[in-house]
Length: 362
Image 1 (cartoon, helix red, strand yellow):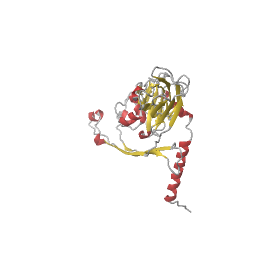
Image 2 (tube, helix red, strand yellow):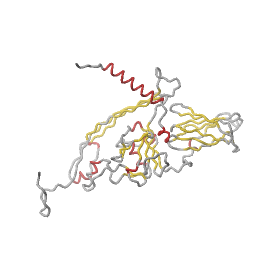
Image 3 (spheres, helix red, strand yellow):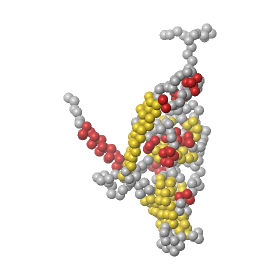
């Protein structure tokens, strides 16, 4: 006997499972591995004469989710806010008898310790809040000796990338080069020289080190294919917020590898519903022919690629609303259909050399 389940029952069940999983993931404390890529903000609050102000209030608001973190300066006028999610923040400092100082749209990237001192002026000098330009924020982390770079969300949006791979973005950073025997575009590499057969040695080298010494993570979680010395899973480019690399001998907290560390940080939801739909198309009629094909009188190889997808994010509302506006979701979908071809240029012996004995067929 065969049992048939109607689609009208399957779809609500799948939707319920997905929503339940999203709620639990959003409400659960992130794994400790993700904490390695959060940032810390610290500094001092001073008056116009350079004297410290104890008891000043610091308010830091994440623009996308309106999540607020607060701190109060100690007797030395110092404040420190740890475990901050990277992103765009508005900062506000206040103290009774002093005008409010604001720093809007401060963008913080992963793995940084930002030192930011604030100055408060007496309330009688100005009535309106003092707004300081975001350019005054120190761009260099002077508290740690970490060498590397970060491809920010702005770079991800602006940089055209043919492969749609977020890891290819790191080639825009200093200290990154393609591995000599790379598996990148394996068939196409064979066109250039039959003697240079690529081996499974990874795709990139950091600071001159071998590819098998790199550590690739997504949100701090392991994403290494140890056999091929590259990533196991490639997320959609539309779901990537930052791509961070560290090329020097980093501290033990990053662990595992003796080479460089690459971390892909994915996007999160915001307090507003937003989304996008995209469609990328490639065809051989839009490409130029290679010099190797031209030399041999060959035409362009057939190539057709269709790459549609969408993203959607926002807050969870009733009946799943948590009452505090701190539960958000983000989803990204991408489907790639590609028809590719390759020309393998190699020598095939058609006449036996009398100097060498070749065994006959079995």
